[in-house]
Length: 598
Image 1 (tube, rainbow, N blue to C red):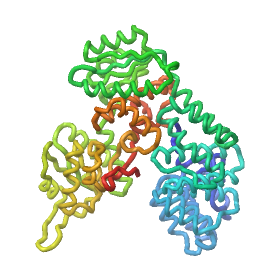
Image 2 (image 1 turned 60 degrees about the vertical axis):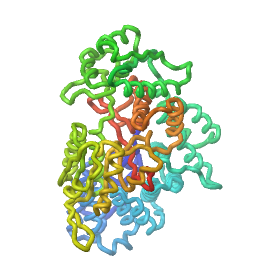
Image 3 (image 1 turned 135 degrees about the vertical axis):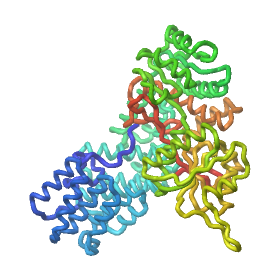
Image 4 (image 1 turned 135 degrees about the horizontal axis):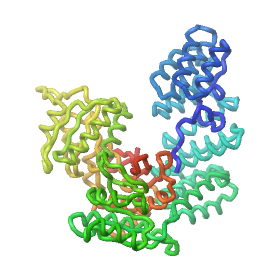
């Protein structure tokens, strides 16, 4: 359940062997004025990376023969501090002679900067410029960077081989366990995103075993109720594999937690009335997850129609009839009404959020598929892609306004700016005027039209996939097709023919909708077979119900947190300090009418 580590804590650098954050595992060890060098080293050990970077820069400024060493040390400390611009500047300050005199050190620092800059291909090119170092500290870092870079460029076979090779240079059990755990997480992530993990012919058994563990790893996350049998089969195939020692022991403990349900669960949903279609879809997804469990170990499930009686009455009746955990209610009004009654009694997973001003009682968890959260996810991605300033095209209405406001707020938090925003009416077909206004399209007689040059992205809040299929091609027609288009998942629903109109559009969505991993496919196929009448809109609600069932045991065991997540069908799920389940979504781009995961 743990996320893939990015950089280790400085004091654990040698023990974990992940990165280059302190002098003990540093790339180079220059001769230096003892007091100043010791001060820089101590700052790095204490995790004060920016201060350490400045201290090394001061040493470099003294113009000693070791100046290049200090510039490189400064660069690696800036990477650890998260200041990529300063890291690049320090690297550039090293003299041209560093490429030959300090070839290994310079290449490793440059490769780490490239990784931090989301350019793993460049990181690998930097490593290709040198031979494998012979010093243990440098060699294990070399193979770590090469392995991570290979996974990030979609080459898990090469990445796995690099991590296996790295083990030759790890001398203590703690760093060995940590490296294997990271490899496991990276293989699982590759499998979750549909990357092929098929071992090539004559692949070494250790590498092949790691790769074939990928599908089992995804099953552990998506559907742990089936994972034990798959794990046992893998063990039979690879009885002496190094993953068996610690990685799978931890995985088995995760499976145990994820399958320990209370004796009885109460499900409170609106099964009649105005919210019936939503409630029924969530119920069916919940039951689908329930039926995945062995009948001998299933909890007793009682379902209550939250629309057929006062919600407080349904809640109290569920407790009186023996519920050890309550899932629901669904509507915001019902969630607000039930919160004061909960008072830390029976744990409850509400399927909506309380208002931001309301404080949830103890054992009161909240899980919702909010479009505002998606908008914030898009804003963060836009800035991460280097597109800080842009425009928005937004459907009129309260929902569109909420999405646009959340996007603009998060964009500003990330240092970006929304230059303009134009609204359109639901059901509108012609968007030429809206596009011309927001993009300041200027027709020039006899020449292609021009548009504003300060917008590096277009955010489309279409409201429906049908509207998005009209807006995106009209953007291209209005000569704005060179500007990247981002949207929320509302703009996508599976369609074998119409989605070619969305080509180029970036959007986040739940794995249920876009993931190609076998575990998700099996669950998706079984639910669509059982409820073939479901629409694309309801499809996401089935996944929502499925994940609600998955969350019960981990919330009961209090094993979910911001640092520990599960990979559900609706996204990677974490629990924040206010008791809200937060989702990380997968990203895709439409290419040739099909979503391609990024």
